[in-house]
Length: 261
Image (cartoon, rainbow, N blue to C red; front, side):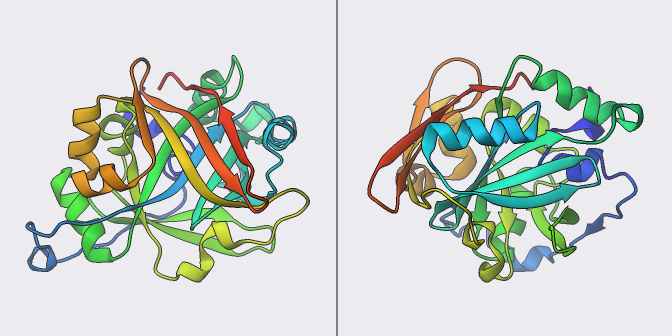
């Protein structure tokens, strides 16, 4: 698979959205402080499913978590948001484009979830554009602004991300490592959206990741590695499970296999 066919969620904004213009966001090198120790936050996790309605129902029945319609990406991927608390969220996504118009990226996504729900990737969030630029520079990528999902009300969201197009798959996700986002206006964080029935998540209390612990620590920094509720396990790279505390104080766990990226 070539770099254009990176995974969905963040990835489909690159591979399925060929017609969507990418605007590279240049940050002068002299604003990047290589000696700065940055602390990053969990931003979101992405779960791929074969059929969105069924996938969302399974997650809701297993966890009781509330959710809302997140909209569509590039007229091809439908998205549902489960707020997890503390500005972190779960997005459940599925290809919805008609079979006759699905391109290679959509076909690849379908293969990734052919055997059921699969964790696709996880992402961190930087507090500042300077922090994001430092990540991009360290990973040999770039900071990029890309069209994201179109909300049900027609609002086109724009994402700011690193290490940029064509690098997240090999540099991050295939190794069980996260990529990064920056949100200029925290008020628009998807975790803060209005939900329907169910309990709202208030905090992620455990995040089980398949990865090399040393590589993950180096990738995200010792400070972030120590602060996030990470449990690193052997085996296939990727997310394995997330445990969330709800508004009532319950703790619920969603466990799936990671996709073979």
